[in-house]
Image 1 (cartoon, rainbow, N blue to C red):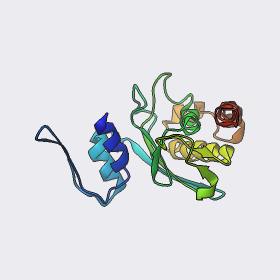
Image 2 (cartoon, rainbow, N blue to C red; image 1 turned 45 degrees about the horizontal axis):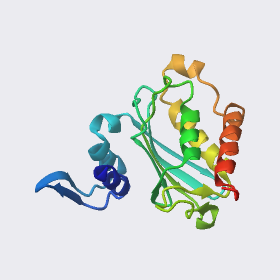
Image 3 (cartoon, one colour; image 1 turned 90 degrees about the vertical axis):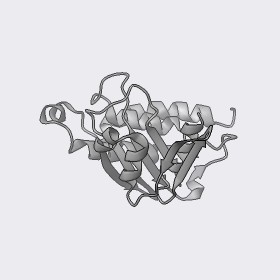
Length: 196
């Protein structure tokens, strides 16, 4: 649990050298790196890093960047899905849902991608005071954030699909993701409403 917490904090901070010791032995000795992909390789493993695709997108005042795994590389759990909002690690069901929507029908059921997504938006567009540990956030315009994540991921994945999969893949346009987005937004509104 301690190493998971350390990993979440240092993953985006490639300019920082980190050493973790436990019981007198080095558990982690991580140098500062120039490239984010190099940092990801050291923390997530070389095989994961080899299968990551860069992505970026902009919608209104929100910008998304990061890396996501190719559809041929999946995990049995969500431990290698990292979200950062304005530099802070968060767990957000809306972002998680958007990621899984982008990978829908492209990976097997109960399999998960690896990804590190950095979302930057004006501080007034996100509420960081909805969780005591500041791990959850609420977006002022969640639909725009959802669309940004799905469309950016779909664009990155489109160029990496085998021809047979690309033909079978659903289009990444709003007609594909809006029904799933509306479902996610209904849950999002209920869980973050004033009656909570």
